[in-house]
Length: 225
Length: 229
Image (cartoon, rainbow over all chains, first blue to last red):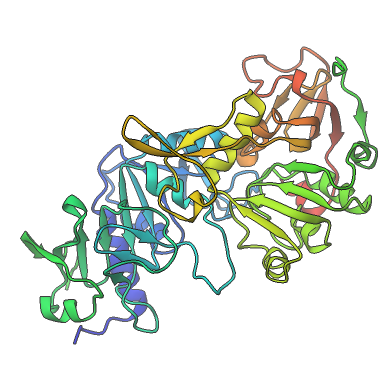
């Protein structure tokens, strides 16, 4: 059995681990939810340029007083940091598709053993639309998925083959869950970090796909016991 | 026919008389930002119907062009995201609304292609997903791309910050979004602005949309959403 982790603690563990990936000067687009939380854990000496798909390069935290002429992709007000620029949607997606962003961080419904991602629609439920997600996973250099290891009902999110509609084919570079980090060398799901108290066997049991184990497997970074 | 050099300044009510039933309209905006709220309200008041709506997202059911959908004025929507508007989803499920979902970057490029005289664009976005259904996939130098066809509209409803009487436009904050692209891709371009200045008052270095693309200028109204953006 995997150790039980309270949901809020799990979310912060994932966000904290993701934040460790970023380097000074990286251009990053964060999705809504756990991904946004990652911005709280970026080390002080790492300067990140946050891009929002609706047209900000250099977005800052939420303002003290809302000015609705400055919003982010989730529709909440934001600030511009010194050095920010404002662009139109065609330019914004040119940056995204054109490989000018270093990281995009998104949530997932399913990620499969061949780095495919499904995160935009559960058939049978209301259809929300893919928004900018397909462009982000296609064009951004590194696609990080931050998600709970299983769904709220306990179903595996890391699966052999996605059966939900895909967002992108072979696009995921890294998955961070509360129990592990998976990477995808040569599009093959590979365990690279494991949280304390988790065995490979227990992890395999909660994972819907067989995964390889990296030769440099180590303890999941960013966890303080 | 050439557009007027000095753009007419009209009430929103007068301006939307150029929109006919069953026509295609583009409406600028992303979430709450950059929606021409006053123009959209005038379309609702004028009882214009059977419209095809091209927009990034269908906002919320009681916000901006989201209301057009809730009020049953739209027969087809082309958008990248409709998840925030319950009316879009409900009408689609009841088969009272046709829905074409396009990835956001592809949608704005289709509009740009429509305005820039291109026969379409090739994008890697959506290859191998539902976004490629019904579209041609073309291989160029070993890589697959989806051919996305241009989009144009009869009328574009645009939100800008300031205009001069030639119709030159500057934008503010994140209200820019789809507006400059849409201003290139419609037969008639109607723009809602905070201020209309004398010709020569706007710095040419800062103008984003040249006035030759614009037909009609309208002052923004004082509804809740219009005033806060």
